[in-house]
Image (cartoon, rainbow, N blue to C red; front, side, top):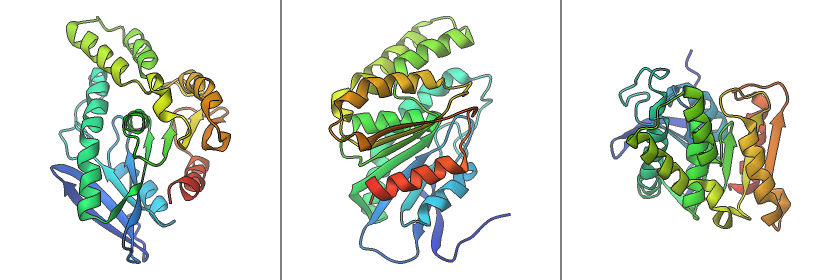
Length: 253
């Protein structure tokens, strides 16, 4: 069943060659506060459609792009090719300016009111873009991580990967772009982290570590928040979406 809304306009678009779904309130505005929603590993824009619709109903323009190897961009066998994870995250970072420029130039996005949300791999993506682009207004991370190097070390161990030159190069790039090494550029900017305590894919310890390190640097403690969900594995709940909406209404508009 395909849900439609009388108040939201939904459109399949391409920005450059990146396929995406765009939601926006039908009520015309000069400029829209805009959220980019990044999907997780093995997901795609279509699978996140209902979440985009939910965010659009409270007044945001929402863009959900397909990452490489996902959706319309040559999907792969995800569980045999987990080592592509970082390649996708890095490509998302590289493409983020293309998406933002396209949204601003063609789709009336307000350049001063662009926020990010992402689940899992999309949470890593959102954290990375946020840390490396000071113009982004706020970020919500669902079961993702701001500690890239630490997560990557765990991933290599878990998958029992032999550290080849390629893998070493990936590790070095993850370290270079690691938001955990960019606390100065992150402090005092609105960050909400929502994470299941029993997350078996992205351990909550990584986010807890980041939170413990950055929270003391904030002047306004309201702007940095980690909400832990007891007994929850690697899923997005209705509660998480509600917290996200509250956050964006406070820090995204």
